[in-house]
Length: 380
Ligand SMILES: *Cc1c(COP(=O)(O)O)cnc(C)c1O
Image (cartoon, rainbow, N blue to C red; front, side, top):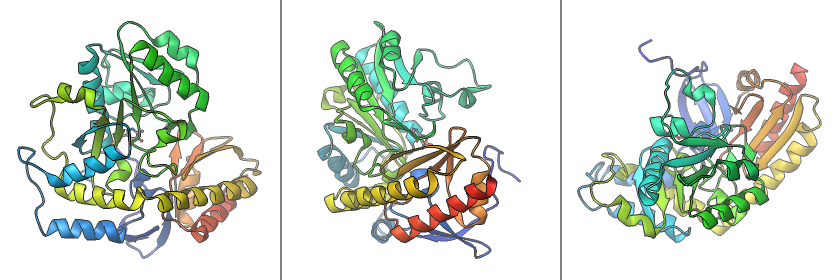
């Protein structure tokens, strides 16, 4: 095999995918409740997104950021009209969006220290790897970029202790995704925002997994009434086309002036066409209400069917972002579920993570819950 062995890949090669269903080369079908790690939030090849991409494919594929790009402006307008931020920088991935956020925070404040949290995940580039609060991501790559400090999630005292005169920003996920689907406590996050305001520290919210409808709101921070100074998007924004975005308040626009930052592919027209269609579908009150209804249904099913199982320790959920924490390592459940025709993810050590498409149906949720139940019962 000519690829780096960077991924422990399952023996599954996709032939086609549509909506929630993925079909492999042998013709076996799977219900996809992993959505390519929270990317295909509208299901595979959502017709409106597909149409937008096809139309753009017939116009042009790439223009340099040396020229105007009306589709970027359209997408940026929708994102900023729906948040308290005003300017968007487009890039191609989550890590790049966080990288841009970290650079901007340093430039704006003239300070270099960024506080992040244990179990956080912010990416794999040099700065975002250092920002990530997980040792396994860093092993062998040291020394890390300095000036990142890690506080304890949901513990405001640890944040207070970490702040000093050099602190530029606090960066967090409102629900830690890779770390195990751990939602922030309301009090904690409101206190963090207050600390930031009081001490002139920027609040950066990493919405890469929680954004674009995943938690039942346009952005996860809306659950907490937060107004971040900077937030980042990626995963669900393009529904499968690579795109990232760093979004910030207008006061910082001049710090990212001409020549300060850039990306050849950032804001690629095909990715922008996809993002524009995604936002048209997701940023719609009735669509968002539907997500909340589905999330409630899923919560009640999880509560009645999965929670009572002896292997299950705790279930955590925000919208259609679900973590089933097991008593022991949950790694073995993923291939067992795959055999039964369900794709799910792990998070942390002991957590089965579900990121169903926001377009999923009650029938699909019923099927998945019953197969998870069957699998967890077989093991114990
Ligand atoms: C996936 C993820 C990232 C990294 O995104 P990439 O596109 O893989 O670089 C960063 N932060 C969070 C919260 C994520 O879930």
